[in-house]
Image (cartoon, rainbow, N blue to C red; front, top):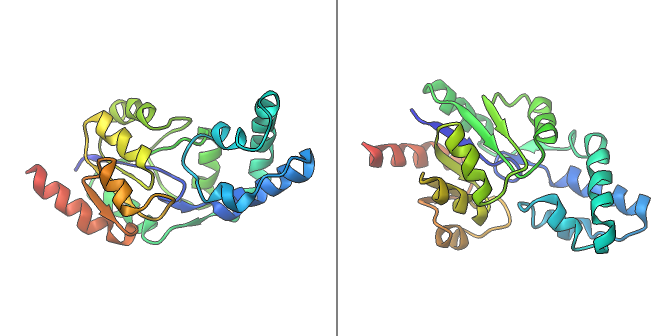
Length: 203
């Protein structure tokens, strides 16, 4: 059984309510309007990319740091596992595989979510996006990568491994396929069948 990598936001967890709350608090403290619902509707790219859509260039670094400082108090407790996420992790581990989370979120912030939700992952790599994730996928010997964003499928393709696209985030199923997904599923409740299909192809 190969190690399986998972993206975090909108793949394993619905972090939108807490991230929206953090953006609202950032607006309250800085006076710079961030439309929280718009921002959480396009989760996936690094935080700096989203912040730069709202803040002047010379304020982006400070806003990123302030957002991250607010994050533990506002973003973690409202997060919830997405349907099928717990079972998907349990399935990989029950079959002797390792679970590796590879995310664009800072590792220390991702760890807060995993610990809060008691998600038993074996390794965690953060602050990586698109092709950058491929480095961690190779380092941890990941054989299949699961993600909700087209950039996750780019990561899998760059690492030379199959990608399972999950249409639970901002990217439509057709876009995930065009980005190179080997399989696309609606949510992780369909992960067992997708995994078995990829494993049969590998035999």
